[in-house]
Length: 154
Image (cartoon, rainbow, N blue to C red; front, side, top):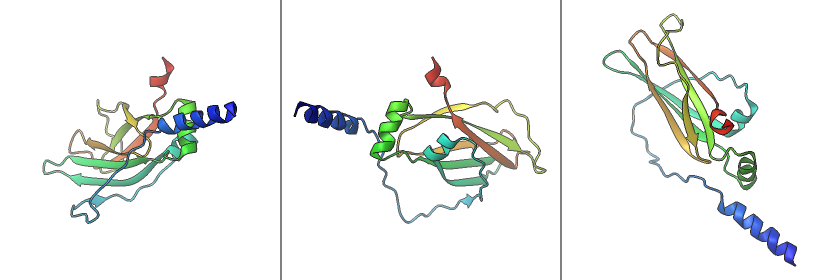
């Protein structure tokens, strides 16, 4: 009987630790966006199962700069996913991202802003990764996302 109580309390404590995000949004979208067809290369099996790219939008601003917004969602929301994430120490999930800007010919434009930017993604949360190109020569982009292990190493 004592074991049953301990197991039950342990399960309840794990459930109480689940911190997911619930979202409500307008169903009738009235915004005008230029959705980008995406091509993805996933080399990290863990990241592939945790972060889903929902959409990619871009807009050219009046001054010729390119504005990009990538919408991503943390898919780790179920009980077992939460328990696994808690055990592995990746709840909330730590990522880092960077944009690489390309000119009209597809060649990389070297910029000082080509650094990894850390971000925290709570289970079930939808995040938007925004960037504006550093100059008008930038006409395309690549977004790289990786796990941010630096936060857990020290």
